[in-house]
Picture 1 (cartoon, rainbow, N blue to C red):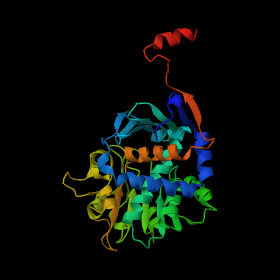
Picture 2: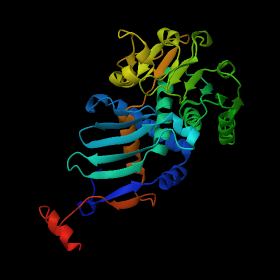
Picture 3: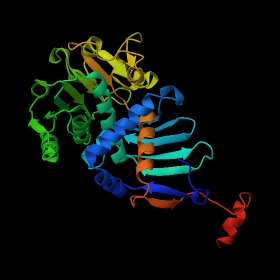
Picture 4: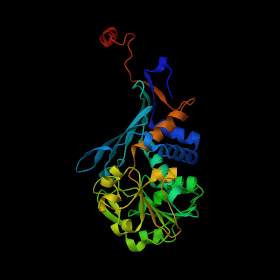
Length: 348
């Protein structure tokens, strides 16, 4: 991962255009599968990472956050926002960018857009959780919320977990039509539905990815039968949930970083002594995942910095020997490190 010293002042930047080209170069499902592998590998070495809840700046209309972590060799962070009202203004609800740096020098080694990459890593994370927690014979996904995340979520579960059918529902029928059209030709059976109840009929896996910043009950307890796995990924800030608390009480809950999930996820509506399992421990074999076919499992996914670190590390590895990045002159690099002023003056 160490850069050539002669190029330390130049930082590879992956723009939105190049990220999209990179996805096509690798292939979407291969990209999702390889990214899921990288996330799982990092979760298996969880104790090596510095961990802290993301640093939020809340407003009445949204939130802006920084998400940092380090494994001792590399440091990474993501800037990300969440503004549900943006959709009505023709803007993205979530945008982001990220940076990866060497701990040894402090020099950046990658600067990247993370609006597209966050959608990819969120989908890959759901696939990793589903791989470890859903029944092995799971084939049908109910996708509740058909916005910007929905196609990525669906195709990640197809690529990693073998899902072959998706049942779509959104409060906005136009979103469902958009999602169905985008998934056409991707080798998955698409069924459009007119209610959440219709969507979850026969589903083995349910993913909720809604955007409204409030305490919602997209799913109620009477809707959830035995053996289902739920990815609740829309509740990603304080005061925002998607599931009735009776579902949470009945399911076996799995989380990323408890200190963050406690204030952002479905867990925020439960008592402090509500039981949960950290997902990394399931991956390492230190804790049980699904233990029976009848069990209801719940991945309370709020997104954690290690997932972004994995995504940046993966992109850094695959852009080598490709044209899908631009070198940015981001680091002032005088011949004499003590003479920054002289470098500035000579530029005149």
